[in-house]
Image 1 (spheres, rainbow, N blue to C red):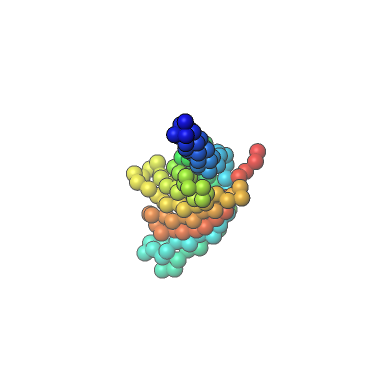
Image 2: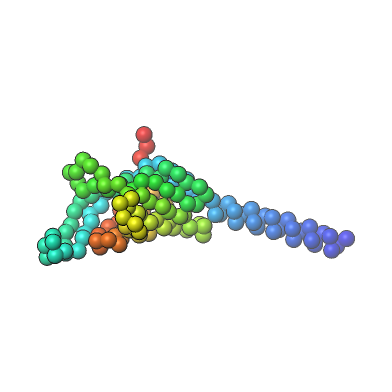
Length: 149
């Protein structure tokens, strides 16, 4: 009888532990439009001059599809004063360790391969993102805030 009670207690403890772990791994729902502004810097380039370029710009991440901890959506940016957006695609994953860490890859539909790597974290309802272009060396950091319609 003691053996059955011990086995039952172990099964209950395992169920509670797994249930708690599953709750801790629940990814936040990032679907929606996120917007942030920033200062960007691009390195010097033989066709553009010897000095690095600094610009004011904004980034829009429109998470349209999310399944569990992975997501997809358009990634758009434009320089301050521009009306037109440059559009790419973003795929991302939210870490299952409960830290809020997010890894995003930005790709261009015109070019095969990754355009940029973005390290981010979700905290207090915002996405804090660090962008690194793999094509031209542009970098920036921004805070994306969810846009409410």
